[in-house]
Amino acid sequence: MARKKASGQPFNIMIVGQGGRLQYEAVLFVASLRSNSPNFQGRVIVVEPQDGPLWQKDPRMNAEIKEVLLDMGAEIAPFESKHFGQQYPYGNKIEGLSAMPAGEPFVFFDTDTLVMGDIESIPFDFDAPAASMKREGTWPEEELYWPGYTAIWKSLYDKFGLEFESTLDLSQPDEYWKRYMYFNAGWFFGADPAAFGARFLEYALAVRDDRPDELAIQSLDPWLDQVVLPLVIHSFGGGRPALELDGLDGDITCHYRLLPLFYARESDAAVAMMESVAAPNKIKKWLKNYDAFKRMIYQGRGQKVRALFDRSDMPPREKQIRNQIKSAGFWVR
Image (cartoon, rainbow, N blue to C red; front, side, top):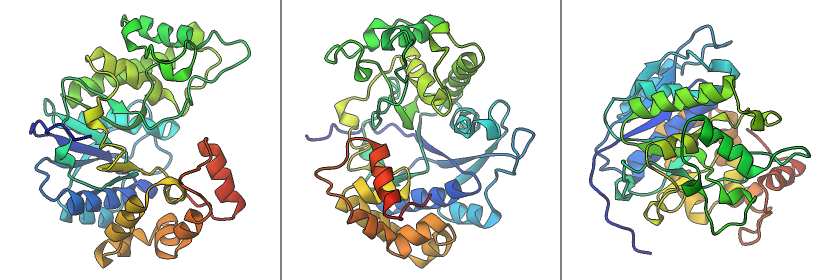
């Protein structure tokens, strides 16, 4: 399918930078963006949680990694963790929106994303926010005495006075998870990060602290952000991504999650791009400091994982892929 022409509207990119794995992923993300979308005109903003009472360990990136990011033209924007922190680090993508320039369109990406093409070729409609459909039916979980998908999802929309029926995909059977709007929070976008972030935070805290009765036996950890994200997107007039956005999780970006999963299931083109972006010494000298990158990319374990699977006949569930890699002794985080 020919891609619809991009709108040309300028936008900023947001990722979360944090000590540990995320800071190395941030380096790879920005390096891949600069390599494969060299004419990107927006700001690349790495929001960084600051040390405080909600963190057991200082979450900030190390100073040398920050310099690497700055040298590649990224900006570092600090924010304070007031509601989540160590207990729910996925909340960084919610609270971190407060560090973005208000009133300027934004696209959020998880750091474990590889940019493989021109990000500005994507025709974002920032007045119709959307998020990634690269997900499995992880929430809600079917339980013996649960009220069902419809009752659970409708209770959430009702809690915030949102209309529910138009969010249903009527091509899917009733009480099947794909009928209900559910996203992976690996990417999402909107017109104003201040407004989007404020509502995301409001809804997340309301669900966390006062959940509807229908959610009584459902776990919200680690699913809270993905439970609330459809509500936020719907409240701003958005929904499932249009076909014009299929370059995301396609030929423009790859949300690889963990490197063993990436090598197991992603395309030859994505693997070649990953290894090409990671090869220059100025990138390699940092990435090899993290065990997963060192073993999977630079010591060849990724190719051994790749040889375990037939990409045309993959196990249907991620858990099965993980177990097969672990059984072979190749799993690393």
